[in-house]
Length: 69
Image (cartoon, rainbow, N blue to C red; front, side, top):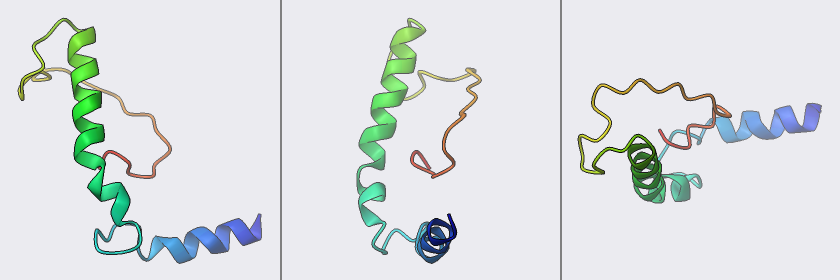
């Protein structure tokens, strides 16, 4: 457990830096977000255009890793 905490503490310094080794998560973010928005809009019977989720309230209960930032 202590080794995991140390590992994530080391990663913490670079986690939010898009030019760090965490860069791949930033690169795929646009694709991932587009996919999620399209699926939610389709589920709600809405057009998948840019404003598809206007007025929709969403609760994101995730891992806290900022994967959709």
